[in-house]
Length: 180
Image (spheres, rainbow, N blue to C red):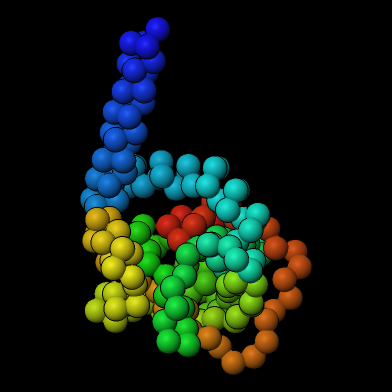
């Protein structure tokens, strides 16, 4: 009985390690097919759970509200931001071509919900040299591990927040994935 349990636990540990190694390789090489699998998982599993609390006070995830560049639909996408002076920093492990960022760049602005506060922000791609000092040592290690070279500054824009009604959940996106 115990032998069987140890085999199962051992097999699960090996599978978990293999999945982690595969994730790191996909992220480092930016393999398109692998990234599509990771984004699909985030869209179907991670984002649906994260959207419940993203942007609320005490949440570890933030929320960006944006408008689809082709559809005009309103989306809410969970992301992770870091303080950057008076602005916010996002690291982009999937690159700057993710759908949510393409939407924000096309619109020129978005709403960002951080710790229960709403900010109107404008996007600006920044160089790693400017971004890395704002990350903790642990986050810099993760960025290095995943070979992240794309960073986004979300600059606070003067003015109030836009109407938040009618926002669809963009379960297809994270800081790495995207909704149209």
